[in-house]
Length: 159
Image 1 (cartoon, rainbow, N blue to C red):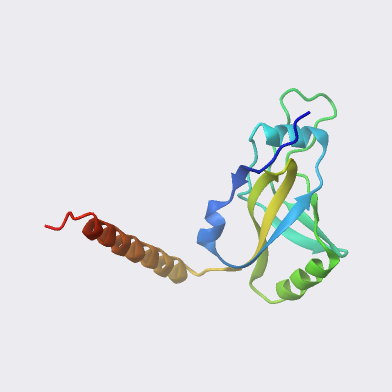
Image 2 (tube, rainbow, N blue to C red):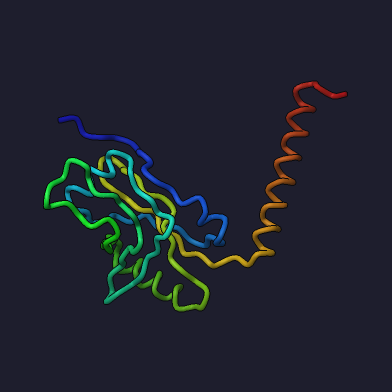
């Protein structure tokens, strides 16, 4: 059997980068059942309502929707069960120390296969206010316009 190499993206949470200011990102393994893996290999998952918490010294992922495997039987999994994340104890201590501050949360950014193993990218994030979101959008728009103008001038399309 050929071993998978590389990275295959399954799902990503684009809204998280809009709603939160990302401070630090961790790559975690995830404990899954057989039907969950098959459902993920079919490219089906949603991170929209997901978040992570530290419970009893372990990191758990809540609210991530992995739909039931269509070919599964009575052994199928529940779609929104909590799943254990595999992280070093040292990293868990760092994360726990950072999340004790108010307004700090753990948000999943991406779910992917890396060399055949399911991984989750979890970010330490701080919620943005409405005016922060607007200013971020204005900055992105300004840099986009500057880059567009620079590329237009370099290509020789000056009027």
